[in-house]
Image 1 (cartoon, rainbow, N blue to C red):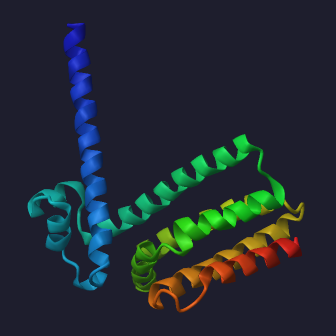
Image 2 (cartoon, rainbow, N blue to C red; image 1 turned 135 degrees about the horizontal axis):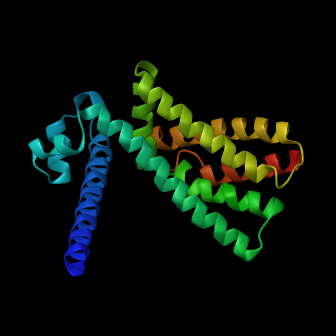
Length: 208
């Protein structure tokens, strides 16, 4: 009898994992679709086809296209939080702190987010949607607040002035988002983003 219960529990776990993987597949499919055409022209059928799932089955996982978009934003935030936490743990194991940690953080953000053209293209689309969709706007605000807090926490390792750390965090995020926008709309090679970001980083560190 115990073996039967164990098997049932294992089957439920496998089913849940399969459902989770399918949901992620659909969320990533939305991202791929938005590389090719705007959200307004992207249909549920487009997303289903890209994900390789039956059109009717897609509604089992999400109620509509907006629901997919909302969960996609959560998915991106969760993914980058996990990547950052792993990165931060590694820095702590290596004993990196202060200005060295801040420099490493800027490099991390540059490689993972700022110069990620595919991610920037998708979020340019999401920003526009957020202007008119309160639910999407709230998700974006939440994502930025988390980014502000993360960077402020890193800055506080360099300066004891928490208010200054908060202000610099907000202005830095705004600058990095601008760079992300430029990296998406300008052709590669138009600007030396590495030099621009390195100069900005050094100037921020000098002010602390």
